[in-house]
Length: 170
Image (cartoon, rainbow, N blue to C red):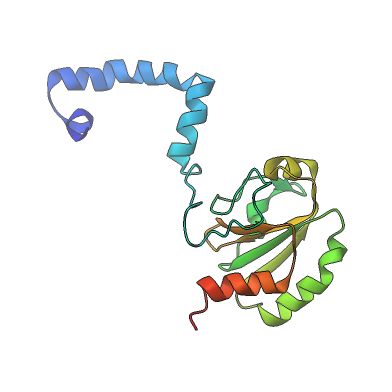
């Protein structure tokens, strides 16, 4: 591959400069090729589903699984990633009634504030479609924006168990 990309052989140089650009332009105009190539080049297709950092209890009914990168979508006109700037874990609660999670927010902010950022977000139809559910749920994102776990059960115990397994070495 290096010889093809950098070699001085006249035939390889001809292929590299005259043939490959036309072939690549044609191939990249095909939707099937774009759908295959984009996740590879952008690295958004990488997942860690089989990593020990991914807990799958509770993600069976979701399109997105623990170990996947957080999908991109807009929240109030901004990227969801705009809310994930702090270098810490992020607990994202998706619900049509974010007030239901006020007690959980208070507990997290009093006990886990140094490690976890809490965000309550509306369960918009495009979010429900991305995750494959219209029921309230929450997602624990690792600092690298990959999902640690997804659950419809919201409790501080579940969060603390995850943190004790993977963050706190006692």
